[in-house]
Structures are given as C-alpha cells and as structure tokens.
Length: 212
Image (cartoon, rainbow, N blue to C red; front, side):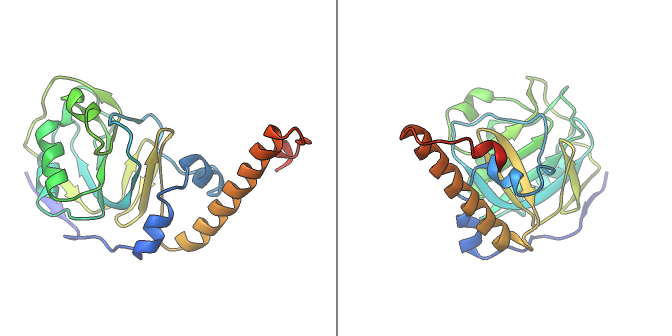
C-alpha cells in the first residue's frame, strides 16, 4: 500500500536553541506550557541519555512498520523519529536492527506510540527510545502510512519540525516558533527552584514554593 511523504526533511531551529533545552527538565518545560502538552503513557527504554531534537513524524497502521522503514531512508542528524502507531501494543514496530539504522543515520532517537522489541539492546545503549510497551511479536510490512504529517502521540499532537525533549519523566514537545521565549522562562524557573532547594538546605525556607 501507499506511503505518503509530505516532506523529505523537516526545518531545524538554530542549534543554540536545541542545545539550550539539553539541560531543561521536561517537568519545567511542561510547567511553562500551561502543563498541557506532553505524551502520556510512554516510558524510556534506553540507558539514560537526554533526548533533544526535531520531530520527523510517521503515522502507520497499527502493527505495521513499512512507513518507518521508509522514514529511515530520509532521516538525518537532529531528527527524532516520532511514530504514531495508534497506541497498539500487540506487535513491535521497532527492534535492535532499526535502532542501529537510526543511529547510523545520526538520528536523535525514537518516540513511539506503540510497542518495541529487543528491549535488552535498548537498555544496554544510550540511544533514546520512548515507547508504550514491549512485545516479542513482529510487525507487518504492508502499509499504508504517512511521513511528516501531524501525528498524535499519547494524546499529544506533534507536528513535523516541533522540538521534542525527553528525560526520565517522559516526553514533551512544542513548536519551534516561540522556543527562545520558552527557554528563557524555563531557565528562570530552574533558577528559582535551585534557590528554593538552597534555602531548604540552609534552613531559611519560608514556604514560598507553594505560592509560585
């Protein structure tokens, strides 16, 4: 069946913006997005590296990974492969070989609203992978699918070129437009929270955190 490709690549924000979010906790990013965006139900399966990049999106029929294979021919440095598999947990969409292909293409990682397999290979590596479940059953490769269209991941809409950030707490995404202002707000909150922690350690905390 047909794989529709809306675009072969996605626009990248300035490198300093991407790198600015490298140390930004997803929790604080979420706080500054009115606590609304963010994929629900996904968890990290890799060893622990931070995920930061731009969304290269894939929508596929549940249990089918033909469109992901096609996307792997197109992705490159800075791309996060974001797969809308409909939340299906009955067949794995990605395994060790597809992990290695993505690494070879210098992609930043996977975010998959579906299942993976070969989980030990992901756990032994720091290549980021967030998914909904693990199962040994393999996928079909029939299609159809779409590449670089808006997708839904765990209830969160992600568009091609959106910035994607993942850490131990989960995955959050947002449009590149406005990212600079968001980064300033995130840094300001991190500084406030660090001051609160310092005040607690020094015995001078007076309950300000609950009022912010």
